[in-house]
Length: 194
Image 1 (cartoon, rainbow, N blue to C red):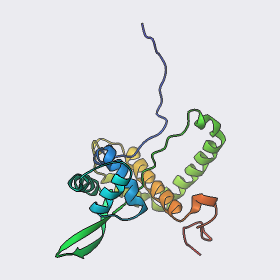
Image 2 (cartoon, rainbow, N blue to C red):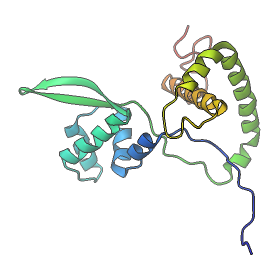
Image 3 (tube, rainbow, N blue to C red):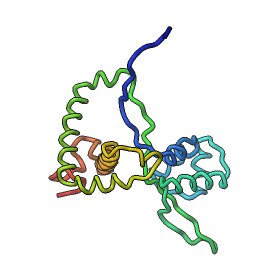
Image 4 (cartoon, rainbow, N blue to C red):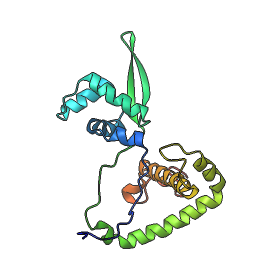
């Protein structure tokens, strides 16, 4: 006899490769990334920032975790500085973690907004595929990752489209487009275009 019997459907898909998941799954790395998203930092400055936040970590430990973030492509060296016969690296995050979750029941409250978003997303996908379909399919055919070989063309194309939309939303956020709904947007809706 079953105590629970219900259909569970996929509500959303997350595009996260195992290497990135492992890198951000560590609590210290998840603390370092937001620091480096705000401004560049050295191992020394990161250790000091963590100490100021009550997280006492030795510089070799911080260096290890920054290296793991760098290997996952989440952090890059922004600047090299000559210091006392050596070189000091200044790191900067290439991603911004959004560690939020929607309050329970919010999706139901936003059902009208979700419907509008769905219509807009469909129009966007149609336009992007019409104008760039062959290039997207070519990139989708060469995807790397766990079980990428077994993914259908539809799944691969969906992943590439998600990446494009995510990066476009990141560009808009960086341009201040989400702050007031209008600032930072040029005449054609592109960040900084005139």
